[in-house]
Length: 191
Image (cartoon, rainbow, N blue to C red; front, top):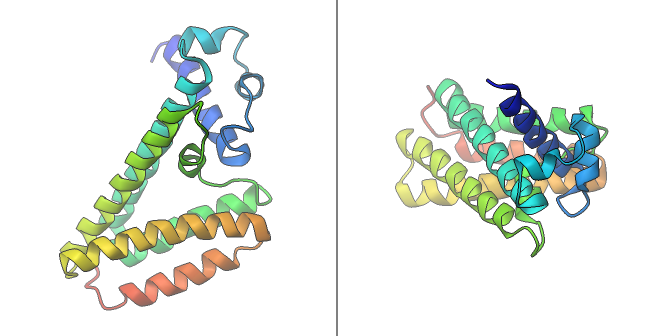
């Protein structure tokens, strides 16, 4: 990869990490440059659309990265194991960041009118995660409609529990959602 590509990727990753802590609106371009060590003006060099383009692409990157993680977990662990591992991932992110780290995709989804592309990419990511999980649930014996409902419930519940956990400074919401989802998935055939 070229240095140009590395600098651009570093800015995208840094932006996603800041967005998960501060939200898109609460993150200034100067914050991203400081976090990534990017020189002044490089944001507009790599992202001529400014913060809106950066937020859209960072949300897309985070969504695709987490989507690959979900797919790999489903393949290796089956639906119940994947849900548990995904909750564990967020739990450790919360604890490691003193309850500051949320989901960068959710941050994109809650961004304002000045960053509509980030909201669109978040919506696409959530839809993809739901579809991936629903497909795995169906492959493990759940009826299609139930698989779709369960997948939406799992994604929404984990994302909501993450917000609650940050606000309450406790992993209890994630712990409870994990327990609930594992009960729902206990009848499925596992890998």
